[in-house]
Length: 282
Image 1 (spheres, rainbow, N blue to C red):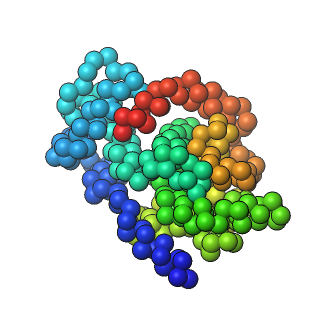
Image 2: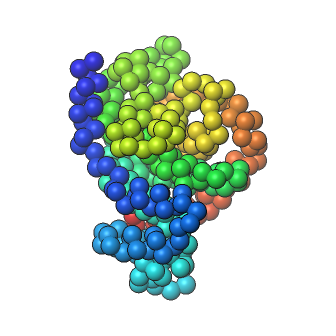
Image 3: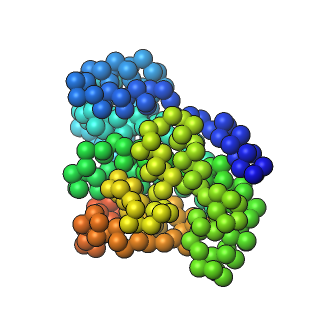
């Protein structure tokens, strides 16, 4: 229990999502809100404004001319893209660091998180979900627990690998057995301490479908599948990619075929350079 208590203390060392991210999510969820409401909020945050303009002018968006103001950025990209950029900015401070215990060098967890968020949002749009920003954010932050658990995994790495090889456990199952908690569960604790919604906490806590695919909701399965697609593409798998459990039932639940996944992978692969530009810009 003392190890868990130490982890809870470590959470306080994380950079919490900035207040502006929560404010923007609130605006988006209000049907009476407007683009002007977001522009006013962003315009009073110099750091966010600078990042926003830098990102808008990156190769990812390939806009026809240079963007010099928040108002122009919103006019060109729309509210939807601006919300995503604000959320990316809020998460970057924690996720860009390396996690050597997981075999992830600096920037690899960030690359996987951004890629997973973009793919999860694409899946949500394809399936007609009205929770695409929730899905995007949950996919972006699903591995936040790895930042805290990293050194404990590093210290117990060989024991975790032994459990995987001898008992056929997935990496997160071996984490939990050896350390007493897995990174998804710890991520849920972080989300709760940051006052995220119960739905967000549930998705982050269960993004590996720990209770089994038959007990999952729609958005959690979208985040799980986005994570799987990244794994298939070799994006940021790290050590836990050595033992990752794929639940084929998710494909049936979501009515997604192998050809749909191939199409997503092919589309994402063609714009990978632009995605790399986005990752560097935020």
